[in-house]
Amino acid sequence: MKSVRSLVENLWLDLELSKLSSRKRALVFWKTAAGEKISSMCSLQGFSDSTIIVRAMNPAVAMELRYRSSEIVQALNDAAGKELFCSLKIILRPTS
Image 1 (spheres, rainbow, N blue to C red):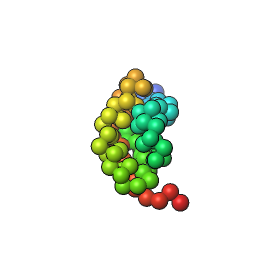
Image 2: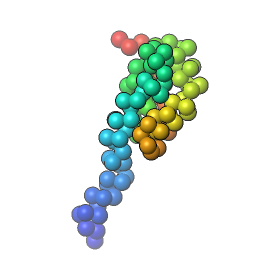
Image 3: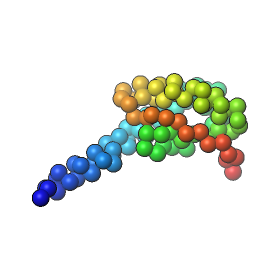
Image 4: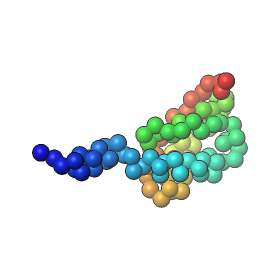
């Protein structure tokens, strides 16, 4: 029979709860990672696991985000000092 402590530690690792607050803090660097021009034409929606969710205002911005996605993800991971994110998910829809 497993101890309660062991079960809680396993749950903590499975859910990656330790990364949750780190991911929230890392997204503060979004403007720097994406650049002023691109970040002004999209909105950061948040994240799901290790995927950053971004809403693009138009197809050109979405294409630029897709093109630069690995660079942006790497910049955010560098700012955090560890690998927190793996990909960008770009949503192209009106914001209303």
